[in-house]
Structures are given as structure tokens and as C-alpha cells.
Image (cartoon, rainbow, N blue to C red):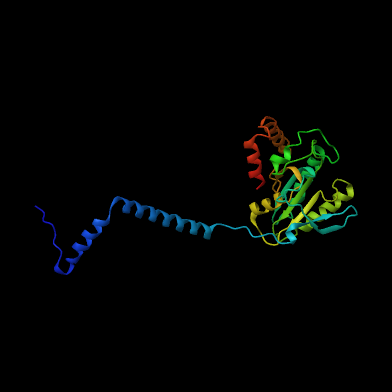
Amino acid sequence: MTSIPVLPPSLEFMNGLVDGVWEYLTLPVVLALIVGILVVDVGVLYILLLLVTHTPRPETDSEKHYITVTSDGKSKGGIKLPDMLDESVEPEVFMSVVVPAYNEELRIEQMLDEAVEFLNKEYPRGVVENGNGKANGFGNGHAATASVRKSGWEIIIVDDGSKDRTTDVVVEWMRKRVEKGEVKEGELRIVHLERNRGKGGAVAHGMRHIRGQYAVFADADGATKFSDLKTLLSRLQSIETHRQSPHHPLQNRMSRNISR
């Protein structure tokens, strides 16, 4: 038979201490201890998440402006971009294409050739078609007031702090296309980020400053085929045709959430 170990005389005081602790360990006390431990754990986890979570840096003043080429072939910078966080901003063109670019001086011209050819063919400027006038409210977060579809397009090149001549190459490319009448002033806009944000940050920056009822982003290396855009847009418009009425309370709530 196993005997219960006896504490040495020097530790006999522990018996009374343990008995006192068990006397106070009632169910409410145990539950309170468990809840307290959980609260502390959640608090520590939250602090750790704050420490490791990336916080986007604020836009600099120069990043709120763009460069384009005027009708006389001269480059022009310092032109203020629209801000989609401004609820008063209305769409001006039908399609916006955001292109994040980092050190793409060798590949971006080919992508622009394909993009402009497609956009001029599918969404020519000055051609206005009857539409539901609602695309903007569910495409970029602002309610469209027009009863007709906007015309035209824009390309926003977001130079993500490139170390090469990406911006200069785009300006030279645009100058040639302006002379040929293939691109108009303001249709191609270049935004140069002072410091690299990464692809996601560059796309988000461009999307914040679009003018289109619809907006997509495309890779500068030509990985995205613009012919696929027509199919994508057709699917989106099909969904819009069958979606709930914008006057539905749930849809209004969703629209407000998107705009935030």
C-alpha cells in the first residue's frame, strides 16, 4: 500500500496555505479567472497584430498629381488627380485601366500598343450609348446620376518608384501616339510614386484616382490580354441586369459600405 508523502517540518506551512486557496476557489472565482486569462490572451494577440500589420503610408502631394502629354506634344505634370473618396466626384469616362509598373521600361510599350488599340476600338471617345446609368454605383462606389453610358477610356500608369526609365519611356510613347491622333491629352496618365508600395499598393493607389464607370487593372508586362476584358465586362453587365433594385434597403447598405 502506497503511503501519502509527508511534508518536511520546514514546509508544513504549505498545508495551511493550500487549504486556504481551495477554500476560496468557488465556481464563480474559477470562471472569473478563466475569463481574465482569455481577456489577457486576446489583448496580447491584438497588440502583436498591431505591431506586425502593415499600415499604408499617406500619399505625398506629388502622388496626388499626374503627368500627361498635351496636344502639342509637350509633357505636362502637376495636374491634380480626382479622388474617389470624395463623394462629389462623378465618372467622366466609361473604362479606367490601372497599370502598376516597376522597372518595366523594356516591356511596357508593347502592353500599351495592345491596350490602346483595344480601347479605341471597343470604347471610342464621343460615342455614347443608352445604358442603365447605374454601373458606377456598383463598380467604383459612387452613384452615377447620368442616364446614359459614359464614353471613352483612360489608362493610369502607376510607376511604383521605378529605378529605370519607365516614366520617361511612357511619356515618349505617348508623345508619338498623340502626334498620330491615337491618344488624346489626359487619356494616358502617369503617376510616379516617390517610394515603392508593392503591386497591391500601386493598384490601390491607381484605383483611388480613376474616372471610369468601370475599372480594371492590368499587368505592365502584357500578361493580361485585353481581349478578355470584353468578356469580363459582358459578364459584369449581365449580373447588374439581374441584381436587386438599387432602391432595395440591403442593396443601399451594400453600396454605402463599398463607398467607404
